[in-house]
Image (cartoon, rainbow, N blue to C red; front, side, top):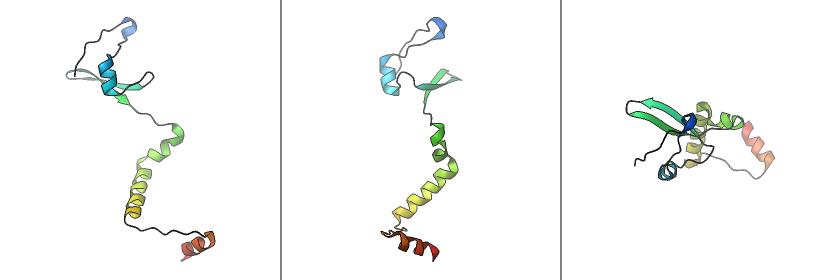
Length: 91
């Protein structure tokens, strides 16, 4: 899909409604701007709050995948008693 947009004062561009809807962008969203062979590419960017960034780090996500694998394979233990749980950890 292509649409025509006009470069306004201060080099601002209003994205046409069909493009906004298809790209699922809202007022205040960030976009990455890149000059490429065919022109200018706008790519929506998702940011992560700094307080949450640790969760999305590669090492943490690798460990999350291991946990998911263990859960799927049933390699988990469930305990309803904290003392029994701690005893199991010591074994």
